[in-house]
Length: 533
Image (cartoon, rainbow, N blue to C red; front, side, top):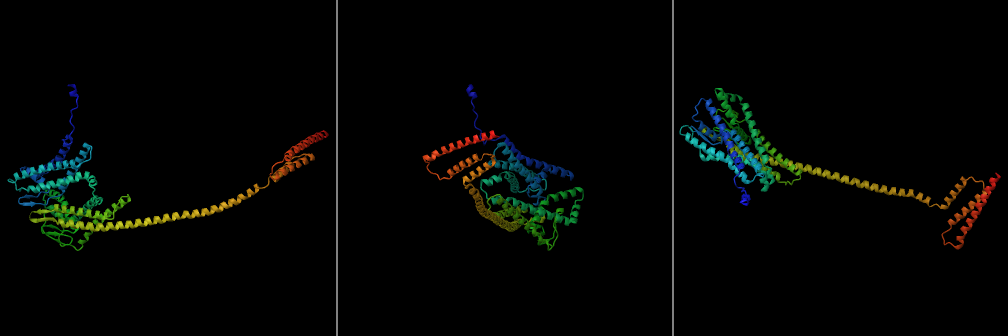
């Protein structure tokens, strides 16, 4: 029993089993954005109904309609189709959902300790879609129930679900893709020029929309008197505030339309037709933001505004050329066609985004008919301007930098050649100087050798004379005997080398005996001299 209880009977953990922490992350992703959005919509609807002194009978239908309108679903109220809906709240909603997806991806990675894979991305995407789709189904049921009492028609369910699914797929793509797109590109060996095209395309689209916003502001300032008249139609402060809020919500729609006009496309608003080459007047809704649309006819200087997309295309090409030059400076391989391919890919992406945004900003609006820009023409023109001017600018800059680099390399090689030539001449001069110096040194060294070659006998005689000069001896006989002996010794040294004979060996003894006798005589003489003294 003890061994059975102490045995480890735990089964291996199944990785596919639900994880409580992971389930909490996914649940938060599914419910956070829809819950916050519904709370804000209920607050706005109730506040509006109370401010308008209306009862709260249609609060549920109004909230459901606001949810669908927030997701660009066409609503039909009292027989009037409202297909042109403000893009600003929709853009904010997509941005919040994308941030929620990115936070969920980071939480999954932090919890598991591993990199985000395709299964985790699919789970986050499914959770992102689950909550909004559930709220959309509920809103459709509420509107269907309220359509029998209120002048609200049931929208197309397929269109409603398609819009909601598309928007939250986009938010999931932006949120999760921001964490995974680089590893995925490396995994599937996506060409580097295609990866590098994302940033310039984004810059081109944002620059075009920014210039559209600037054109809208300039148009409103130019027609400030009309803006004031439209605001005055609100009556009281609540009406003026409502017109101002609606104008702000529709501002992105007008900016996108202005960007399409700058690209060369046309914008239609019922009978009003506007482009850089024509402008025809007509009736417009009483919104202050629409006062930016000028009345016809079109002035002759409007086509000058085509310089805006041309400049944006040139800046796109300049950015691509700069990135390629930086990559070459880092030692990376960049082919000659990478710059052109990057520009073409970025232009195509910018054209697609422009076309989709122009299409989303328009629609059908009651008796005005189709409202918005020509989306496919705006996309094609954006691609044409960006691609043409971008390729020209990029190739010119790359060619110029290549020429400058070649000139610098040639100058560097010439300088190196000159530097390498100067030391050779110096070495030749130094070699010649060295040889002459050696000759001179050899000449200077010959004299000491000559001096050293002098006979030793002369030096000994000189030394002997010096010694004789230094000694102060009064005995002449002793000096004479010493000179004789020295002369005999020198004569013996100067004789050529030969085998000594027996007679020669005996002579030094006789000489030594004579020297000893003479020394004794000298001593006696000294003694005699001392005695005499």
